Length: 92
Image (cartoon, rainbow, N blue to C red; front, top):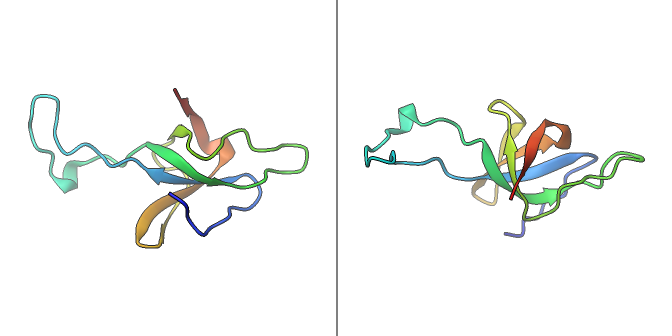
């Protein structure tokens, strides 16, 4: 999961977890009806701001707001770069 990218300041690079393609009852969800994922895995973290180091670490599963961050593509994969303050919490 190593990416050649180093976020600056309090930014965090997140790899979104793929959205579900089926409901619990087995109904297939078309791409147009899928919601954007709001959960992902931290891939890289910046050093933080002066006197405010980042609190998440690589490998953490995090929850973020639906419209948080900026989408980018690195090495053929989709990622999201968000400020640590836009993360809602760590899962598990």
